[in-house]
Image 1 (tube, one colour):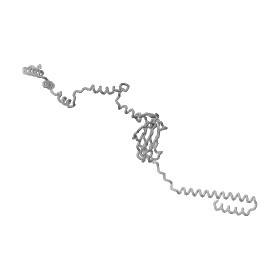
Image 2 (cartoon, one colour):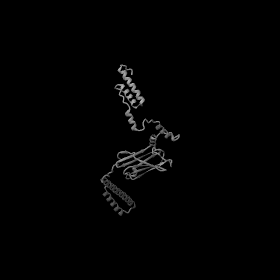
Image 3 (cartoon, one colour):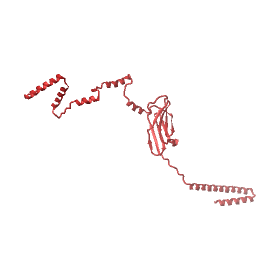
Image 4 (tube, one colour):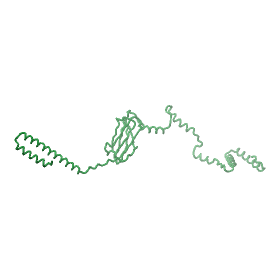
Length: 268
């Protein structure tokens, strides 16, 4: 029934109430009046609700900007320091202090930590450090975001202990580079070992110039030529370097050899 018709019925009931004198009739009219008023009220509420829905439908839909996380960049660029209670790791990321706090996440375990920075200049940055040199306290560790820097604070499980390296892998690599000396014996034995190696090295010459000069004087034997040429070269060298007695001996042998050759005897 239309709201206008209900309104007319209500007016007519009111007129009858004014004229009615019998209690039973008036009670019936009062009940009908309440019923009509309730129907009118419901109609009005339904009409208001429909009008509000129409207005909502006419509003333009809100534009929600998509959350851009970009691609993930793995980082291993960091520096570290320590105090009696903490090992402090610094990683530099330009503009990291401008992203929401919840975009910078750090997860700790007893021997590792990983950092994830979401949606920084359209990228996400991650850094994972495993196999820490010593255990850390997960509950006592935390992070701080400063200008262009994320500071990771690893609480030492055993305070007042010095970390010579950040990770176990770094320690093993550095120790491989060190000379292998037996520390259970006298420490001076390591130095003596090195000196002994130098001592056992034979020097054939005192200077490099001397070495080069001597090597130039060595005979160069050509195996493709007459083998007797090498012998003649040796004899010539002995003659030049020998004393007077050696020279006389060689001269005598040479003369005798020439005499035998002239006679046809080639035993020499």
